[in-house]
Length: 252
Length: 252
DNA sequence: ACGCGCGTGTGACATGATGTGGCTTTTCGT
DNA sequence: ACGAAAAGCCACATCATGTCACACGCGCGT
Image (cartoon, rainbow over the protein chains, first blue to last red):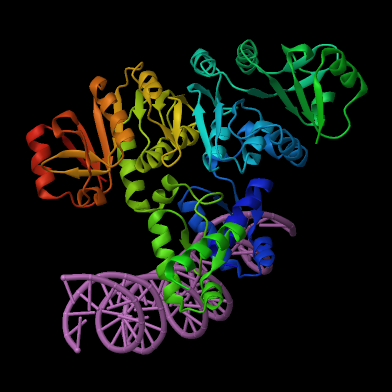
């Protein structure tokens, strides 16, 4: 195991856990604590990690921002959903991806394409995709929302609507059999609604926690959504509502 | 087995395993380690592999992006320059920041403001600023350049030119007393030139390595630059050129 | 044959990575 | 507020790895 590999895995660990203890890392990688500290010092100099007494955390820019905190909630479920959703995407497509946490996982799951065009309003999604070979990224800019690390304003809508994506992939705050797809943030909801108007095929990605939460703002009805990708058991009312509206269900 | 064949197989191995150790490769191909290193140097020059201590890895995937790699070069100097440049910025201003590595450090140095508006075309700069309290971030979107993690296209230019910033802060690839401010990438240079047209006050941030490098594309003359922030000793020809053009010098 | 370019091996030297011990700083219970 | 324990930092030793300069051998062509 080279230093490079160790640091790469350390960062991966960090991104999954948010923070690690030096002693744990030392035993985990079977090196001295001083060596771990040196790795951490390197990462900190690059701004990729943040040193704290006894351990290491994600840096300021990536820490404690709501969207990234929520990335770690239900992480396994979201990762599974993301991989299932990635299988719906084919080489050569143009897809639009919004700014939810499941979308971030999706961006990381989009590997192995040779010619994929992605439009997004999310800093995190764009950043993850820039590391994937074969993916061209178009970022919808505008005034950024610090919580979501994404742009929802008129400018972002205008840019995103200039594309004709094969699939529009949205994550939703909550899903209700009766009321359809809901969200919490007015700006985010407005952005999604604006995209729905011009979408050819809408794919919603959602971990199962979305079925038991209550949203406040209506975004879409089942009839507007072509595919719903979810993990675990999908409640019967949702299955019924989807069947009636013609929404395909994909279980991760 | 010719060198060509060996390198081809080395790349194939790399693509299957992601990374290889120099010692293993040397025994595998029954050549000296130095020979393997020479192969790897060639591949790295072509961007087809990435050298790490003790081995070689694929250039894509988890590897750091070029802009983040370059953040590490001259990191201390750039950090110092960034702090000096931050002191030129006052609360309430609107500033435009471009996508260079020094600009990334500047973004991290912009702390303690209560009302600052920043316009940028860089993912990294925007990401760093989103967590600074009191900073509103406007991101110029468009097609993203994976190396720079920024947008340079017409869309980004149009958006950025919609602001009237109090200061336009640019980093430059090279600075020459006779030819002025230079860059390497045509897209990046084009973006900067487009901003210069409408800039009220141009601030250039540069670590001292910029003075000894040669750029290929002309971006600006000294007369267009109001402030130049640099670290260490500024060469006499630069000082003279700046004085003649009225460019203020700030030493970090 | 001769010289030339190129790839390769070799050894000296430079750089990098890691562990260890002494010392300073931080943390936390009392 | 104090002091012990934990954690961090630094300097040094050691070993692995990288780089460079030079030498050798092989094919090639005027």
